[in-house]
Image (cartoon, rainbow, N blue to C red; front, side, top):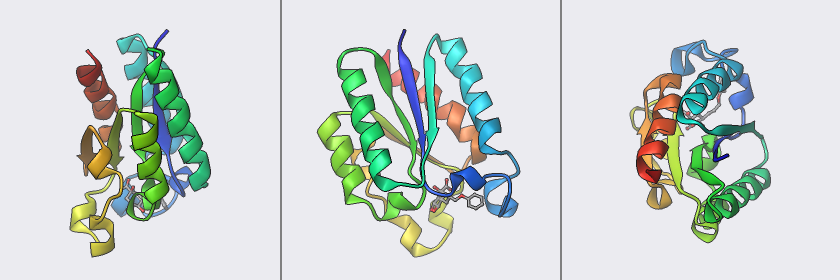
Length: 149
Ligand code: CA2
């Protein structure tokens, strides 16, 4: 069965517990449930993960790229959180693994501090979904379905 990866970076385990004015009130478990519903509808298994460690995200992107190359995965929805704005390693992992990546942000990063306007993921992403709250996650999975059809 084909799988899709949804990878979440640092501090997203706190979703729904702090800063509701920026990130809303849904928890990461709520987000996972909404992604599982869409994945089931699309006939995919879902790898839904969160880590506070940059290297672990690199490992998972490499894993997804390898699975994609054998037809076992369709790609990655990546909310790299703050690593988006700092990590050349993530960009290298996306390029090196060939993973199809939809970059996702819950908040509209372009309405926020200027350091959030920089993304090392955007230049190597297939597409970007920004500012739709957690509703962006199922949108991004549907975008992966469009791109991999
Ligand atoms: O808007 C997004 O999805 C972000 O990727 C979230 C990151 C932020 O650094 C990016 O600029 C934009 C922050 C994730 C931390 O999430 C929290 C959620 C609730 C409470 C505290 C942190």
